[in-house]
Length: 373
Image (cartoon, rainbow, N blue to C red):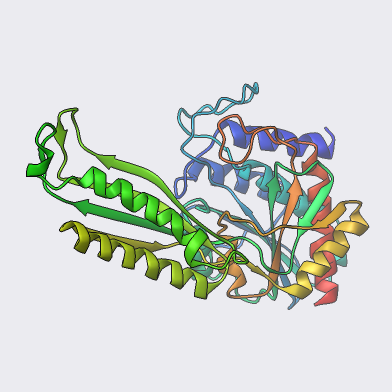
């Protein structure tokens, strides 16, 4: 079996058996089996799921990272290796990322004696709920690491295309829940109540004005209300409505300004309507900030490996890799996967042609980073 086909087979097996964040037990077992079978060392870290492998010797340590969890999505891609777990799918391509880093591990193992240090390959659990990177760091898997590199497939780029940028790349991700409490009433006698739905609707409209009227148009910011829940029948005005949504920014001052404005609007509407409005704020992963040196280095290696390279646009999605980059320097990159459907779509179907090339790229990147560092 060719190297390319082996990686594709592994990817397809992972794709058929997806597991949600923190539940990647079978995925972990498969990865451990494949890595151990290839002769990789598997240092023991206190992780309930996820695997860490290592190759080489010496004091210098460079890390590579893949994510391994899936999403609560029912697959509709139509591929003959579709998910066998109902309601769970690798709709973000973490199966692809894992196969890429498996390939890099195998290539590095082939010339382990020539490596000027160690490469630690981290197969991280729970990226989708933003808890995995913190668990990996707490377990000690970054100890001694001087730089770390990771990837995400990019369905909007052709296979053979590479993109990254120095500085802010992926966004800070915050989640908010707003609970509006008015007074219920018969739908035919609204004047006897305090319509929580009317208030919630106007609040949604006001929230959309934050990005366009309170923040400079030169800044990147998104405020999205993604869930509205209230009422349980057609002829009753409900007493309460709950809104949920997300805020995406790249600069901490803008993040703080948006949160402040949301709270001000909620307080103002509560006063104006004689209602109660409660805002709960959940801070997600911070902005992913690539080290300028390592982003430029990663791009040069990509060019040498045969990729068509470009500077990536800022990304409004979140990425747990950001937590690593607050601890040690490194770079996160995009590799083209040419899928008709985007990330988190039930028909997402990345082109497997990217896998072998990306594996060879990361093996080369890790080896050259050991020399550069």
